[in-house]
Length: 336
Image 1 (cartoon, rainbow, N blue to C red):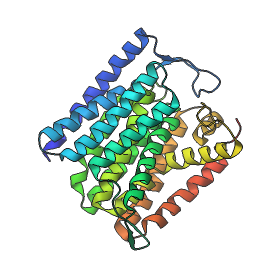
Image 2: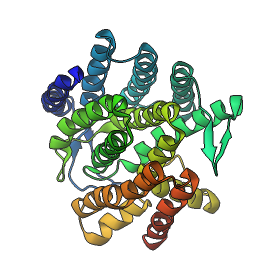
Image 3: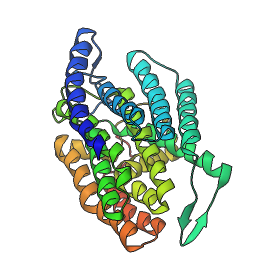
Image 4: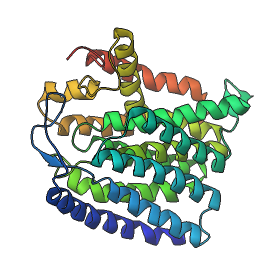
């Protein structure tokens, strides 16, 4: 495929741009200072995720301009992802009220859904269900939750980068094994964009991703899952399964904090991964565990859904039950 030459170029752009952003952040004192709610102890520059955004979007536009990617996908991801990155960048440099951020998130989600065609019919227990406009609303909520939970889960060195790389790698394996190779280009490009940043973000991190990068990754992964859903309903279930580590930890934590009456928009350290990193005394073992869970547990379950005809919803339950057990074991959403 002629687009593969872009992959190493994206990796190089991301790698070099992250280095430049680190120097910029240090010069402008854009530093994440540790506090009682932080999972790190060393002041660290932030905003490096902009390199992921720029390198990926450049490749996206190049693929579209060369006729190797349909314009609807280009407009969906570039428009929605770009808006989320701008909102995150502005929030990294100052502060945007939560209500305005949320409005921007829903506008971005609506834009992406418009160009992708909304939520396609999904197959559950052998029955095809078309939710129509209700499905579009649910898809918007899905995208907004995914981009926000990705921001919540970006709290220790390397975890958000490793999650994105492993999820995209798993998706590529499934695409290749099930005959959907035409969908592989964007996940591969995203792997390269995140890989260049991960060089600087790997524990111990020399720069953090920031809201621009984490929000962009969340909505980009969500839009890729919807792109895949239009090709095969089973692929959408596979994406949900592959994203399980982040989805379960963030959702379980949010629900538990809501039930306790906490102000969920305030920073905290009560995710399972945060409790785990404190328990083991470091970030690397937890980040490694995310990779192992995704590739050695979630990917095989997703493979059974895609290749052996297991119902997608059943596969989702099978995949998530042990993750919920881990969330309970590590006191996700509990009092710090």
